[in-house]
Image 1 (cartoon, rainbow, N blue to C red):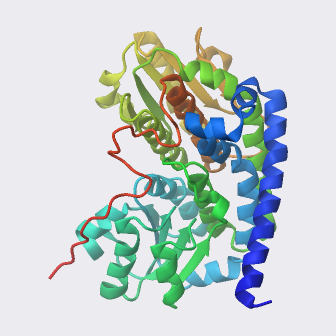
Image 2: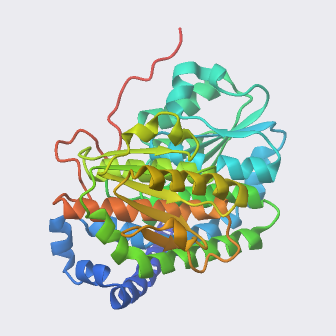
Image 3: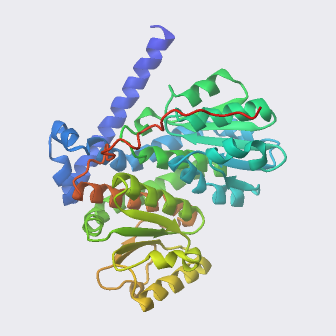
Length: 419
């Protein structure tokens, strides 16, 4: 058997194994969570006709795919270490959801690696070029689901031409994408291509987002592959419990009479808040207003947007200092009597923070997980709210943009270069 044929056969075998594992998990979900039983009992053809087949599978497969990603990426840790050798800082970049995935990572990497780390949107780099980046030798980590958006390869090509000293690490879900192909052709680029099951078919990013974050977290465990896999397994266990226990209550909240939503989070969890707000906006085809803020930032103007038709979602920190500020804000909203309902997501949620009609999403099984870990669970809450509201409003989660204004891959545009 030729090498290419053997590789294809191995890939098919791995895909079948992944699908078998997912089927077992979906059966368990259906047996214990009525909202999934109702959706998944329908034949696949009906699910596709109603427009939720891909999205529901891509949301539910996340715990399994996280563990698979951690297993595969942990074998690449020496190569990842080589990407950082001699670097004075790290910049994580992407566009849209990929930029928010970067925001879920940079606080963790800065704390663990003791290197300045920040997330900078690919658009900012195209607009401002090297001036948008910190001085000195750096590693540019590019995140992209398909790798076919104009910014993806455009930023890398720009940096290769104008800043050849920059190290590059590519994390993508699409082996056939332009970005992955560019990395394969240039020895200056390291690449991590995730399993093709993470390359979401649906318009909105769900498992692609969280798996790129899981892959990026490996940079914080360069000397501890077992610790990396263990932390991801703990997050996966908590995610399974979240789906089993809270899908029903989140559906009830999501299909309530709110017309706006604000998502609050700090640190890595602010990146999750930005992604959760985008999920609701995308899945509702722009029919609802949603935005993300920090607990302190909300007071500086954005609080005026909260009224009786606003859902407030707070990703409650496990850090005592940050939790103190967040609790103060929630109490202030309560005193002012603003907001329709609150969804509070976290560990050991104080009962007094929950008013009548509010939902506390207790992250059971999260054990020793801290804020940097919990961002992935926050994102799943945002995905579920967007998904169930989309269905409730008669839209199709797989392709919610009825007018075609947005698409799975951003439409081609001219990438200008300075003359």
